[in-house]
Amino acid sequence: MLKWWQETVFYEIYMPSFKDGNGDGIGDFKGLLEKVPYLAELGVGGIWLTPFYPSPKVDNGYDVSDYYAVDPDYGTMADLEAFVAEAHRHGIRVIADMVVNHVSTEHAWFVESRSSRTNPKRDWFVWQDAPNNWESFFGGSAWEWDAGTEQYYYHSFATEQVDLNWANPEVEREIWKVFDFWLDKGLDGFRLDVINNLTLTRDFMDNPVVDGEQQHVFDKDQPGMMAKMAEIGERIRARGDYFTVGEISSDNLAEIERYAGSDGLDVTFNFNFGSVASRDGIVAELARMQQVYADGRMPTLFFGSHDMSRSWNRLADGREDVAQLLSMLMLTAHGVPFVYFGEEIGMADFVPESMREMRDVQGVYAYELALQDGKSEHEALVAAQEKTRDKARAPMTWPEGFSDKTEAWIGEVTPDFARGQRMFAFYQALIALRKTADFCEPGYRDFKVDGELLTYVRGEHLVCLNFGAAREMENKWGDLTPVLANLDVVVDADRIMLPAFAAVIFKI
Ligand code: NOJ
Ligand code: CA
Image 1 (cartoon, rainbow, N blue to C red):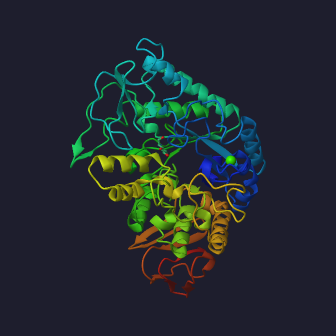
Image 2: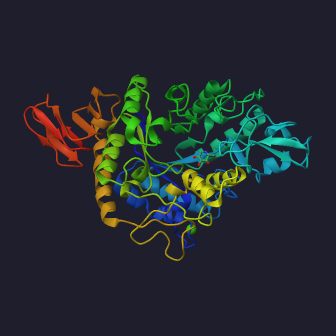
Image 3: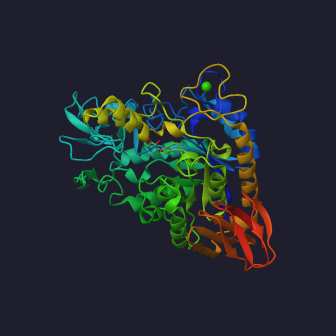
């Protein structure tokens, strides 16, 4: 018996950018509620919502200042509940982003902690007299001087995102309450933010530096992390049929996969597949995943998120056939797929043209660090454009517009509605197919990589994905009925002729 999430196509919604329901230019639960029928029509069965908790939004909600409420920009608790009920009515489950590695410096726990060295919450965060060499994942030192109490606090991301001290059992107990609260609200599971970064030890060994680049060795995957992950997974599973997906800050499959399974989280994101800079390594990585997950556990399948350039630009070079090739891989392979909002209509990147348009803290950090390094303003802007995650955060291009009253909180991209309709229909067909038994079952038959051609059989379906130039392949199946293709594929008794970037599913 498969679990519900093993048969589910998830859809990531970046809260501020999906749909504005009250005309202030920021996406919200009212807008989301309106769009549930759209998601049902697309066919997705699960939604991952990025953080919606009160937050000063230095990192757009990944800096939580209250775990038990809804940020007024997104609506009220009642709006959230109405949205979840509507999603459930359409058979769509909803998982929430849980950011428990760090909180906002405005969170009451930290306000207390920094009030004096003897405050009972002092040890809920990581305080040191002297910093070690650890760098923040956004760049610059990960330690910030607190003049009031004359110690440094640790922040693995922005200065305003202070790391919780998971070595303190009180912190852990408090976070279990947070999990319980949201499960009691009817959410169906969690996406756990940078969950292998939790600070579990007090070793603080300097990280190695190779060719001037810090290697994040001792500030993540600390001793005890496997057991901690098992505990988190177990606690959530013990409450019922919930789903957990871990964001693991690593692009090494061996590190990523060990946290997934019945003695860890349900699944973990593999960035060496989803966020690669070009198409080149995708087929080889899928082949590795096929071996690693041959035991029936599931990898995740995605080519986009709010943290990277959109796959339309990064991987498809703005080509519809390639975008469809990627979507066919993602929606027919063995794993749990995550569609990033807008991908199903072929949305392109937004690139801020000036620092005035730059919203992402990572882009701003890159700009400041470049200036500190003696770079010119223009060079610093280019560095920021390179790093900024604003690229994927432009608002969804709805036919009626994102917001009916005002400009959006971030720059918009020019819509291409005709392309959108074709892409949507392709995604819709793939998702419908994915719901059939063939594509839900774990594993492959006849999994084969031949140069840039990837083929596999799932149930009674043969999938051919040509990542290279036009070519032929042997037809050893005989009678093949094409079910879905992005380009014209010719089949005769012996051969299958595949144009460059062809993606086709046959019934065998
Ligand atoms: C990963 C999130 O996806 C990203 O957007 C965020 O900046 C970091 N974690 C820190 O919370
Ligand atoms: Ca709004």
